[in-house]
Image (cartoon, rainbow, N blue to C red; front, side, top):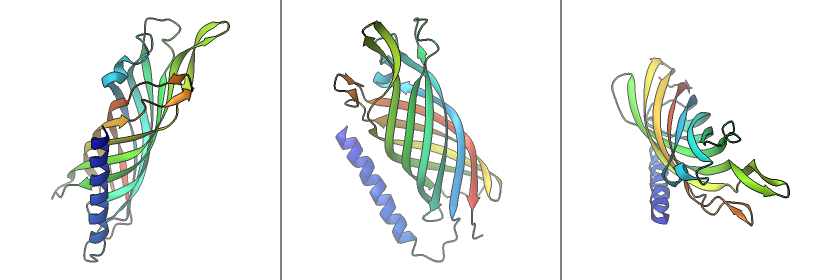
Length: 217
C-alpha cells in the first residue's frame, strides 16, 4: 500500500515538473481554466462492501460534485475538486433501511487530455486528497444500542480515472469518467474505542458539463 502511494505521488510530481517546464513555451496556445459540474453513482469496493457486520453493509450510492482547474499546458490541467457521495445501506434491519453512509472528498487533481483532431477528447486523471467518512454505526448506550452517523478522522486518499470529453461548442461540452479511489481509513477513529477498521475503496462514475474560460484561440 505504501509503495502504491509513493508511486502515485511520484507520478504527480513528475507531471507537475514537466508541466512547469512546458509553461515556458509561449508559442503554445491554450485555454486558461476549466470548470466542471457532475453527478453520478458510486460503488463500494473490496472490504468496504462488507463493512458493518452485515447489518450496515454499504450499497450503491449517488454522488455530486464540482471542480475547477488551470491549464498548465494545452493538454494538462491542475486544480481542485470536491465530491459528496451518499451510500445506501443493504440491510434486513428495518431501523437501518432508511439510513445512509456519507463520504466527503476534497482533492487536488492532475488531468492529461490526449491530443486528438476532433471534438472527442479522452483523458487520464490522477487525484490526491482527503476523505471525511461519516458512516452509520451501531452505538451502545445505557438504554441499549442504536444507530448513529459517526464522523471518523479524515484520511489520505488517492486515485486514478479515465474519461472522455465531447465538445458541443467552442468553450463547453459534456464528459463522462470512471474513477478508482482508495482511502487510508483503516486507523481513522471516532473515539479511542471506535475505529473505522478498513481502508475504503470505491468505484465512481461521473457525468457532467465542462466550461472553458479564457481561450487564446
